[in-house]
Length: 475
Ligand SMILES: *Cc1c(COP(=O)(O)O)cnc(C)c1O
Image (tube, rainbow, N blue to C red; front, side, top):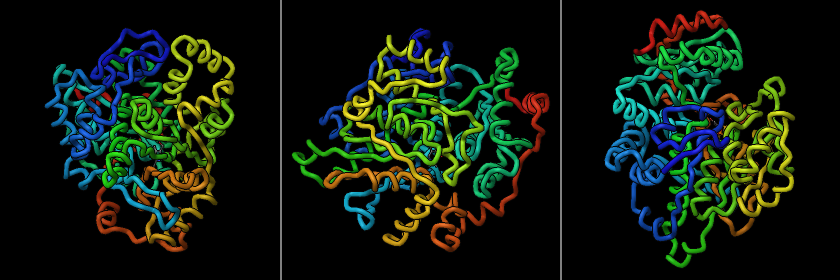
């Protein structure tokens, strides 16, 4: 399997190479040169596998340059019992809320958010590739909460990798802070910057802009455009279809298609669903849900993609979706337009700040199955309450955005699965606002909140950051 750049300026690379690189040298994103196909017979062969075994098989369709047995070891580590319950991804019914509605539990990992599923794979696969090449990597990132903690929990204690994670002082939830700062592993470096998330991101950019510093200190990233994360996310779409059809007869399975609703920000999670659908997985529709930052909803409704500036991005109660420029959308638009038409279209976007693809709107819906909707603070509170009243179960604000839009878009007779992207406990404040009382705090969470924290405070200053890196980077 070879990977090419969306912008056409990269020699084809294998999976392990794209795993270690960020953007392609031409500024584009790596996409598979061909999309592997899984037919009905393949799916039946995959049915008996456990989640880690399925992950090895599905990721293996892309990671053809990793030895099959080694890949099985990597996914067994990533999704094994010390990190996830069994099964790693449980499905449950929300039929009391609406007939045919289900929830896919993607938040059972160590940081209670779906990002663990992709990051735990990278946390095994990247050190494996580095070992093979005799290299080390110092991962530098900025987080507003979920990505940073998922990365730290995936790479803690791993040889040959260290993590420098910038976070905005005083801007994360108590749980998010505790998940990151309680780690005492010597290869994890938490840096709380006096500033907001954008300041953290600018510091990362400033360090990366210095090519000689970057190469001297082996600085890398594990951001949401990494194709390794996408490949690991395809797995749970396959898993969802398999578990949804376990009790059906062979004839029923042949025509059974599901709708999947995905709370979206950077288009990474739902792009993996789109890839799974393009591979032949029987997904009927992909229901994209945004919060008040609705650039993606606008795109799928009107065909016009108009990213917004950071200053126009609202701070909402589903903060991990407060994104107004969806990096992974480039991959979808590349597939939608094809190689040749993509380049001038992307130039237009860069020059004018918007891209009008309204001529392709019906293809996005009919050929690719996308529908979309937006949810607001009031919607999210009402949905958390509705699900709690009907089932006794608590869902988090991001998942609530997914349920809100799913309830609006779902059609009788078509089962609809909402991806649970975080646990309610992680965003207890909004959940309490919805149900009118504080949700119970699990004992593990209480212990976590009480643990000692390890964090270095820093000014919003690139020289200070560089000094911190120089002092602790692996060489
Ligand atoms: C990251 C995140 C999202 C958005 O996922 P994308 O891949 O960026 O679309 C949604 N919910 C939660 C809880 C997240 O952490």
